[in-house]
Image (cartoon, rainbow, N blue to C red; front, side, top):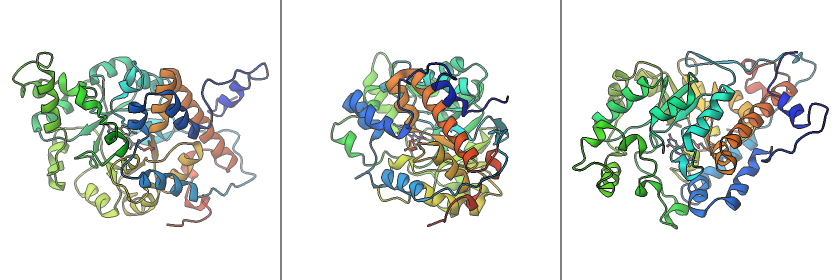
Length: 389
Ligand code: FNR
């Protein structure tokens, strides 16, 4: 009999013998409150926190919750296949891990633990520019597994050029250029604790190991770490970039490029005109602009504008298998999973990320099957009760 992601359910029940109670909840929306209880206030606030009063983060969840699936009956879903073509690669499911920086505040094994868990499930891991582990060491931990690199496009062209060359050399295939963070948003939970990991040189590993970055320092990082942090803060973001500047990125990256943080259909059209391969419809999990449009409300409009020309990915608010289904129905090719895997890491290291991925994929597989689909390709807006947008 074919293996299905849903089989994780039978495994939990012990496949007919005595089952084993999972170490973490299987309702992944419960991870946040568990993390708030178990983790230190600084790291918990950094991950759970959002811009302003949190309205965008809440809107992300509400926009997904508002859409309801209308399951269809008596369709043969006995054999299911979640395989999805994304940006020229064949993924085992329409899922990748979102880029999340500074994972060492969650667990000492940080990015490598998350990357190994992703690799074990065949899910691409997206490494942040702001990782706490240098990209080469994450690549080493992943073997041949699919990995993507997220660029924070800063002020120093040489550093950008160097990051792209290093990432390509280390086997990262897809470049994710995040556009919504030329500055960090107004985040009260961090502000109220004066907590920002970068100030302590956490989340700067790619920079501190970079020859082009180091060339801008008067002394080696270990001799004057404060100066290195100041230099990092000075070049991390660039509020002056405009669309034509993307030519520089295109010129220095041979593989697919996707722009992350796209919410307006016209920006998606501009991405296509600039020779990009895809967009991630995302508001950074509500961490940048309070009062922003919910990502799931922006998704169908972007998909309508460029779905035939660009690969449309989605994040911001995905917590459960039915969220993945809804994102596909609204026009996404695949989704990026953010906070839930980070909570899994904080609560139980690599095993915790593994748990989160297995739960999400099992629930997605079951949602597909119970809604009358044998794979992601047939999911469409017709599967939702209405589109309130
Ligand atoms: C992020 N995100 C992010 N994005 C990015 O492009 N580079 C990064 O370094 C980070 N860092 C980061 C840290 C933390 C703690 C969080 C929660 C998020 C945004 C991330 O890729 C994704 O867009 C959001 O996590 C999606 O929102 P949800 O679904 O996690 O709420």
